[in-house]
Image (cartoon, rainbow, N blue to C red; front, side, top):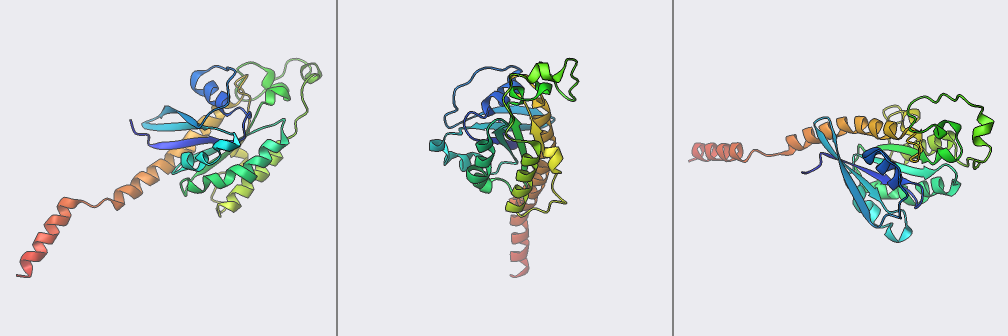
Length: 233
């Protein structure tokens, strides 16, 4: 079955791309090994089939990223909230790979592993708003200090719009397309993928409409040609 659209996850190794995808598609968390090359799932979203590609973060597989991004309708750029370098790598090493994506490509910025720092993500399988019933200090006393904050993700998103020469007024709002998640607990994972899929559908429909306009009806073309030939005899 040929997909109607493509979503690609990009990011450095060990940021949790594979874990995010497993959490959403298989509803579970599992320890994973580094992805070699790429792998994908096919997701039904309404009447559309969307392929979701997981890519390798290792530098030796870096060149494959642009191939996987080719004609992608959305790219999910993923970093680790406890690792500042991981978000810097998105701009320095991974953004250029999206040059092969669709001209209308949607971008989402996702900070994973908030369960290591954020009391909200400690609540198992929690989606939506966080409601903490126990003191925050008791939850985060042994947690790692967060190195990347939402403001950093928003700043990167705006840089991406400039890089793509997109008008910020016409693009989805940064606050809507920047997320903090935990693949381990499920926190906000569904929100990421569902938001991206909803944003991708209009792009898919537009691309289908454009392809339809570019398609030449050969039967009509032959009829018109024969009619013209008869007139000129």
